Length: 307
Ligand SMILES: NC(=O)c1ccc[n+]([C@@H]2O[C@H](COP(=O)([O-])OP(=O)(O)OC[C@H]3O[C@@H](n4cnc5c(N)ncnc54)[C@H](OP(=O)(O)O)[C@@H]3O)[C@@H](O)[C@H]2O)c1
Image (cartoon, rainbow, N blue to C red; front, side, top):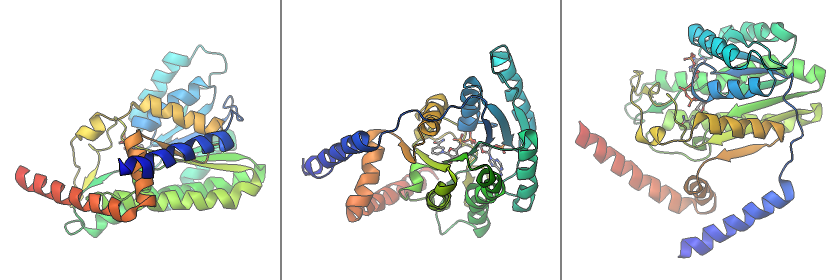
């Protein structure tokens, strides 16, 4: 009952105020826009690719798995090839783990149409493990793919956006970029860094008419947990129940499209419980951390039982 008065009512009032004062209308048309998507070979990035093509954008699909990207491109041609304003997607190899290769990858992306209107920093890798048992290489790997790789690619694309005095950078973080969850340290830390970087960038490039959106989704039904790393660097290889019950990639992709069309800035795409968790962390951190400590004990016991 106390929680209801302390959190739910103020949260609702703030939400209504925010909607009334700052809610955005569609101000940006995606038709003909050049969009570079990282992590387009799977999950959310793949779903976004279909939505951008449907909206008439010129899409560049990037990831490491070129065969998968070509399959997606061919399927897109099959589905949308006869539409007016259809542009066949381009395919680009990008390995965010290889930081030295990224300036060239950025140049290659710019070569296709001479510029990028929208950069979707989506690729990512997750992690499951305890801090004590996790090798430093794993922390470095997660920081390279989830943070430094996107930072580097963004820096390659940004000068051309600044010259043209237009552009939109949409970066896919996570609710774990807002709150820290036990046994997810490498992922959570990389997403906090990512979230902070793009929130700084937003202010720095606003005067050049460049918009920055950070979207922070909750669980999405993708291969993220299957591809996650464990403490010793192996693949986790399992679809977590939370991920299996997560949102549909296509519905999250629709929110991504809306966030760009409406020039939104910081969007949390999650259920009410998750949003209240973020609110709790900010308004009453000691209670939030108490809950997280209990969660850590529960998860450790669960893991010990399973072994
Ligand atoms: N699923 C969720 O519950 C959830 C929740 C919140 C946020 N997110 C975020 O959503 C984004 C998309 O993830 P997803 O859920 O769609 O997972 P996913 O299905 O596993 O897709 C991850 C994508 O990242 C790419 N990728 C991985 N390592 C890469 C590297 N070294 N270089 C370039 N690309 C790389 C993969 O392509 P290749 O393997 O072909 O390179 C793949 O296309 C991530 O940033 C993730 O953190 C997901």
